Image 1 (cartoon, rainbow, N blue to C red):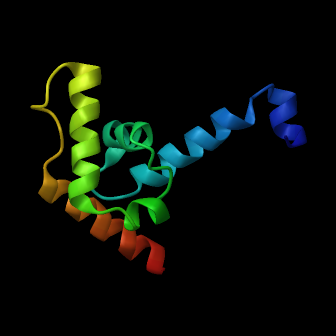
Image 2 (image 1 turned 90 degrees about the vertical axis):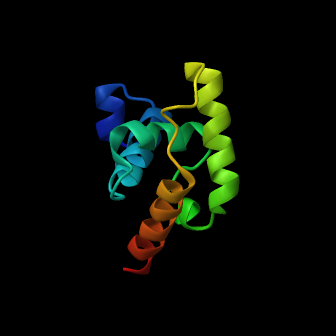
Length: 94
């Protein structure tokens, strides 16, 4: 923990979580709502998202939507997830 985080009494795990959410929200189409969903699915960075197979990630997101929201109608489509992965790959090439 750095002196700044110690002074603010912030736990490093929260800072890491906020950092991951911010990074994922930079991907066009992900935003803040879906960055949290991705984090709950175990995706913690754009580099990790860039390596994910779209179909597998979509299934994970669908399971999360059903478990957390008791519905799947708001779940991102496979096409949206595929686009996120494409955008994450572009971001990681920079």
